[in-house]
Length: 175
Image 1 (cartoon, helix red, strand yellow):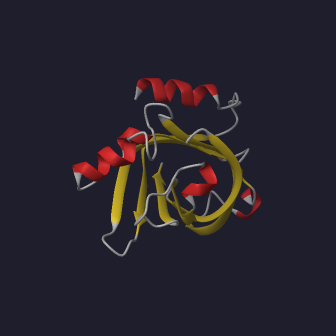
Image 2 (cartoon, one colour; image 1 turned 90 degrees about the vertical axis):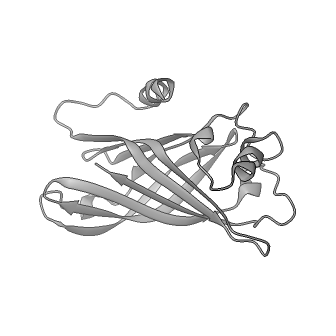
């Protein structure tokens, strides 16, 4: 985990002292792949994330091997050479910006719709993405949430027979 955090800060630009940067190393990513045979679910509670409230910079980094499955065989297949190949591609990351930052009042409690655009790297493939989400502010604490569908084939991940071609991803980060 220390290597991931060190790597994470290498990709984050220098942040001036007048800016407020929020950080967590316990953000969560959950995914669900619904299939005819059975649902495949995994959770990762060791996601590193930071957010700068002045620039809108938003970054996530996750170790692929940190996804936990209820079924150990599913976890083994997920990390194996035939699917995620986590030995060769050990991490995924998002480096982006909240594009509608001016619509958020950081001094007022509430839930705000946000839009983030950036580069998502999975399985060694980087794609520009734009995703919606929400930012909740309560007494100076910030919570980010997003839910979106991901197509593994877009990241050159071979989808075995019986596995859904579309995966539901849920992300949350509490600062």
